[in-house]
Image 1 (cartoon, rainbow, N blue to C red):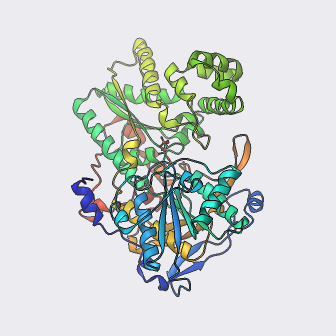
Image 2: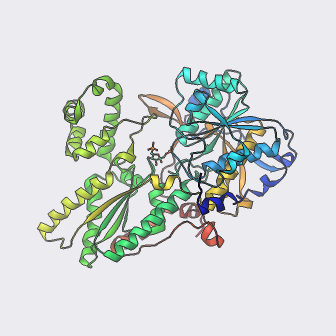
Image 3: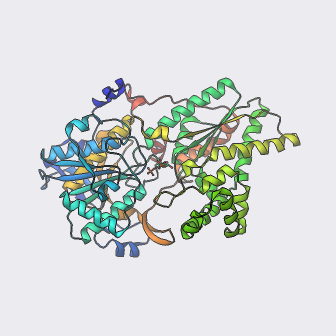
Length: 553
Ligand code: FBP
């Protein structure tokens, strides 16, 4: 296969590791902290995870490693949406395994978790690995969204683990996939199997984080890619001076991506779903907020601007949240009847009778295209596929309608022409930034060390990320520590809690202090493309979110 000049150059990039992990494996010891508790619902979780609950946090430090040199067979799974750096996690595991014992083997499960259930693997060789180092995408072994939930799927996973004589499985995934990893770890112990299960925190959405997981990998590169594109659009808007650009950004629930891109590019409006929910803002209130900026800028002769919209927004607007919850319920509980309805009109008629009065009115008020998008299939974890709902178009239409009312009243005298964009898939497979390349490699190596230490039910963790890589702290966090019980498909289930944008946190507060000025004036920032070679202050910077969370400028 032909490769680009950048790809060739990236093969040669040597990811940085925390200093402690550069020592010979025999000289890396694991140190344990105190026993842990889950973030909530301790009693229920203790009962559900009898063997893996409450384990201590692990940290690697210089010392004697009694387990060094073990020959290991490990399987790795890429789970869920693509995120830049996945291949480097695999490289970290691979290099760790080979450093520990040349005879150790790494198998890649093909197509995500279904590869484990169906025993579909490929052995990762040095030659194969070298063709994917520091590259984006998950194409090395593929990914998938299969949820391992039925007793048959658990039994099939165990059968695969036994057939392949697996010492461990590494699940590279987000909150849902790592919840699955925790369940699998517990199940294997219950079944007296020795296969360990280790997770790695992946998701461009940035919502798998807590005191031990400072960020999920892929967030850095995805935000930098989107910010480059937003900056380019801002410059175009400022050149042509004739369009308002409405840009929807990925991030299924949390608005971390939108907030980070807002901080990086300073557009006129940055919507944050968590604020919309906290302030119980309706769609009409959000539209008024955008119109206020459009009117003020029009008064100053600025008939252009940029609006950033998190893709999960619709699920946080109270009236839409209620509607979606009712739809999810109806579509699950009366699935056969719903599937039998032919066409959108029949569905709308049926829903008008089944939905509560308020939700029926909200549904009827939506443009048909948006209403249809709300009825599309849910993903295997029961989530609405928000990436397929054109919220940017919904808001463009509503803003235009509101502005024509204001025009008639004489309060708006400008010209409004809008363009919609959706940036999501553009950023998920970019070449990982140096930060993600290093972070992922360290996460993979640390996952190997957790396996080497005989641990199971842990998430690989690398901390102190605003410091140079040599000072990063590697270890592992028990998965149960991040869990609570949540209502899913009509019953309470153990899940890893998603980290939403904190309205009292420094990133949001920094944005909040500036947004009035950004809404009125043109304060655009143009970050440009990710740089891989050059000065550290350009190439090796973490996200603004991470820096602000660590009180760094
Ligand atoms: P993960 O949570 O699996 O990392 O995926 C996140 C995401 O990229 C969301 O931002 C987006 O809504 C979704 O995946 C899109 O899913 P799909 O790839 O199935 O279209």
